[in-house]
Amino acid sequence: NAPVLEVKDLVKHYPVRRGGRSVRAVDGVSLSVGPGEVLGLVGESGSGKSTIGRCVLRLTEPTAGSVSLGGRDVTHLSRRALRPLRRDVHMVFQDPYSSLNPRFTVGQIVAEPLRRHGVARGADAETRVREMLERVGLSANMRTRRPHELSGGQRQRVGLARALVLEPKLVVADEPVSALDVSVQASVLNLIADLQRDMGFSCLFITHDLSVVEFLADRIAVMYLGRIVETGPTEKIFAEPQHPYTQALLSAAPEPDPVRQRERRRVVLGGEVPSPLDPPTGCRFHTRCPVAVDTCRTDEPRLTGVREADRPVACHLVTPSAVPDLTGRN
Ligand code: SF4
Ligand code: MG
Image 1 (cartoon, rainbow, N blue to C red):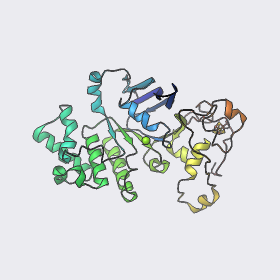
Image 2: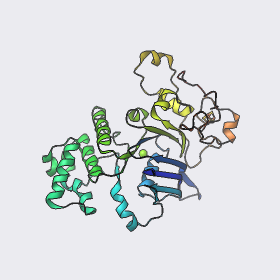
Image 3: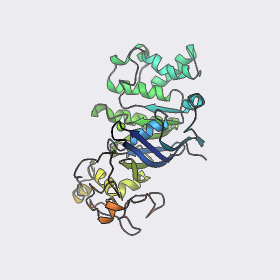
Image 4: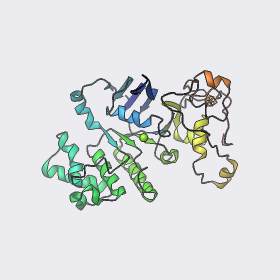
């Protein structure tokens, strides 16, 4: 049973004009998403997570490594050969305004993938558009509206309808709620969760906010400066984060249980995320890691299942019997 998405040793470097250097946006990332699975890809801005999403959709060409969809390596397929595969993979963007063509009506926007792939036209397409709008919680008479007449939440529902109208196997959602008002974020997230359950698509859900994926993702991969530093099943990551960076991210998230909240120390990371033009030597996190030791400055830790095979972590201080404990959570 081939994974729906498999990314292997992906590298994406962007050359910069002066100095012959490059921005190392993604620097050797492997991940996979199984049938019906949701993988939350989490990291601060500049960690490379959006670049991975763009490489999966071939919106940008990887420097090295491979992307496979349904077991087929698509890394070097021509645009033409890619076309039929594009039916199965769709993207939901962060900004639902700039990603919708302002001159088209909602009906035209949602019908466009049906037309482009020759799936349905005319009355047939119209029926499917109505059904799809209903599934995302919009009334059928929204069909004649244009994007500027809609609220941010309605626009993102239109973006979802467009992404899902072909019933894709994989949806790449890049920060789909972070541009929305806090008051509508939860309703759109719940909608995505319901649609995912009903339609069964696999999802690569990209976000800077760990709390957003807690109830949506089956597994989580945490990125820092172009690398995955920890990955595993969501409940395990939340119950016992191993990597110091994951612990810091989680310590900033609200804790509903007041007892646990009191017992837990909040980790505030010093400094900025270093430039991906010049990532630190050794462990890339060492310039901000509160428990770094000498080895961390020289040796790069490998992402391996030190304690459990299903949750690899890249940190010298994680051993079979202990993890660094920054928050009092472990
Ligand atoms: Fe911190 Fe060292 Fe672990 Fe990196 S390898 S996270 S610097 S302790
Ligand atoms: Mg981004």
